[in-house]
Image 1 (tube, helix red, strand yellow):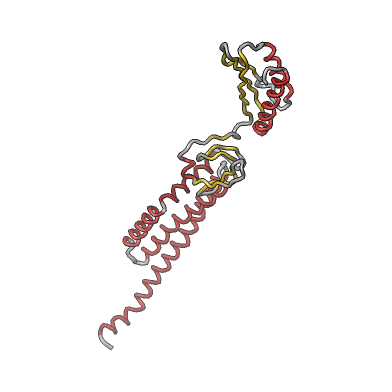
Image 2: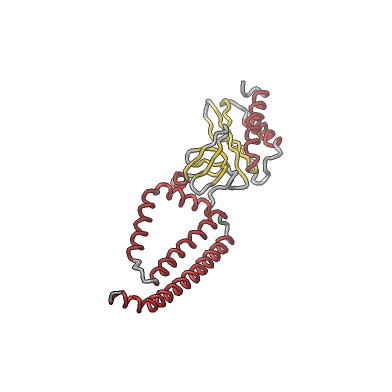
Length: 260
């Protein structure tokens, strides 16, 4: 046995003892660090859960915080073993940057989805115009939102497009105003037509009394008189009442001879 080998064998117990101490400390760092990561993630979930934030977002943000903290804990534990972590951190950072650039569009849709779920410009079941699509919201996902137009198509819109576009939500408020325009000849008896239109409004039981419905002359000239008919209804009754009023006004004006 050479002198170097003999010296190594003599120092082996000391080296093993020193490494064992480092290993134990590293394990303690990992165990305590993981417990802290779990505690912080749990606290974050409970805090977010008290607000009106979607459970999917709460779960994701909690898991994300746990993963980030745990990554630092692992690096700290490895460093305690005597391993140089500078290169490891650099590689991890470069890999994260590369993945982020490769998934730029996907991450944009994801962040937009999180914002939609947090701020709730619309909910599932709402009637909207969003991303150039008119229809009912069928699903709000992390990356895309599904909208069902009246013709039964299923349209999947990336959340990034929704966050960068104007959103019109027809279901956000409890009431909506029906606005109809009625054009009649210029020599029409204004009082008689006003009474006729008022009778049509009174025949609709779903029209709200407050705000009161209104019949307003919006324009007039020698050739024509334009009436605006306005009435508030509950949002869920808008389509039914709007269709019914158009039909009743047409029938009433035709019966009285104002329209052919």
